[in-house]
Image (cartoon, rainbow, N blue to C red; front, side, top):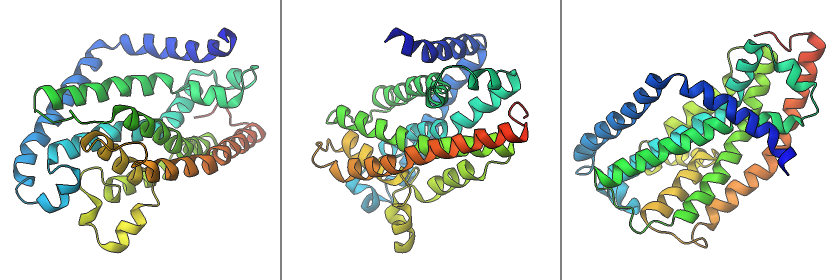
Length: 271
C-alpha cells in the first residue's frame, strides 16, 4: 500500500515545498478571496431585489448562490487546466522523459501531478464558505454536506477527463489549448456560475445541460442551500457518473496516443 502511495506523496511534497517558498503569493490569494466575496456581497444588495423569481429555487439569496458558483469555479479551473500546467512544468524542468520511462503507471503520473492543486483549492473553498457564513451570514444550516461532497468528487472526476484531453493537446502542440479554453468559456457563459440558467433563452438552457458543470452546480446548490437528500440528488449523480464512465477511459487513451506521438516526433521534452 505504501509503495503505491510513494509517487502521489512525492508529487505532493514537491508541490507543497514549492508553494510555501512563495508566502507573499499565498497571502495575496487569501486577500483575493475576501475582496471577491465582499464585491459580490454588495452586488447581491442590488440583485436580490430584482431577481427574486430566478433565485427562488435556490433560497432567494444571490450571495449564497454566487458564492457556491465562485468557489466551484476554482475546482473547474484546476480540473480543466491543472494537468496541462503540470505537464508543461515537468517539461520545463526537464523531468518529463524520466517520469515516463519510470515504472509508474501513466494514470498515476497524471493524477499525482495535480494532487496539491486540488488540496489547496479545497482549502480556498473552505475559506470562501467560512467567510460567507461567519462574515456575510450566508445560511448553510440545512446543508447536506455529504451529498455536496459526493457531487463535488464526481464533478472533479468528470471535469478531469476533459483536463486530461486538454493535457494531451499540450503534449503534442505545446501551446494554444482550445479545449480547456472552450469548455471554460462556455461554462462561464451558460453553466450557471454567476447567474441561474433560467435567465437564458430556452435553447441555450438545453445546450447548457450538455456541460458537466451545469448539473454539478445545480446539485451542489440544492444540497448546500436546500438540503436535498441523496434520492433527490440522484439525477445529478447519475449524469456525472455516466459522463465520467464514458470519458475517463477515452481521455486516458487520448493521452497515451499523445505521448506516443510526442515520442515519435522527438518533442517529448520540448515546450
